[in-house]
Length: 265
Image (cartoon, rainbow, N blue to C red; front, side):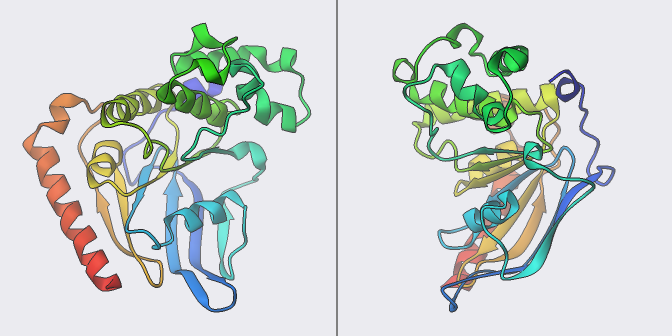
């Protein structure tokens, strides 16, 4: 994890490529087009939000990148060599093992790769420290709040030092105060470790606060209709949330989303 701590995010336009989706098509059951002609380049240090209505292929795109399914046509190309440790995934539900401690839940990706707990305990403790849960390593999921459970899930996703973290509406089920707090925590984490993130959301406000690139998608068929750059500097805080700059960005993104919904109607 020490390498992960030292990553720095370069300005947009100077970042090294991580992966590329090239003209990706995904058809289910032979006749349902979930995703059509998707092109996306992901660069090191990007925080990309996939924003759009239900059925626009946001989660399908994440599953394709994760290798949980294969494209019907098109290609997903990783830069350089690629293995399972390159990817961390955070789902909408924390999906923790209730019988295992917090530390043992974070250990799971290493366990699946045949490593012993003792050999990676330092990395596990460091990941928990990054999400503010170092004092809860021996607690069980039933003892945690919803926000704390999601922090465990984030620690589990980043513990292997992945090149890319995929987050599928991770805060959607949380109350607004907890959601904003985790948004703040996620950006603080990004500042510390320079992670690359693709984040699925339905929220214009969340996408503008978190992202430097917003991919707006339309449904039927799922496709990209716009890309918007949020060039506000990091770190972002409550002052940014209440600024004229934030309001201007949300207005632009809201207009693009309404147009995308109109295209799908």
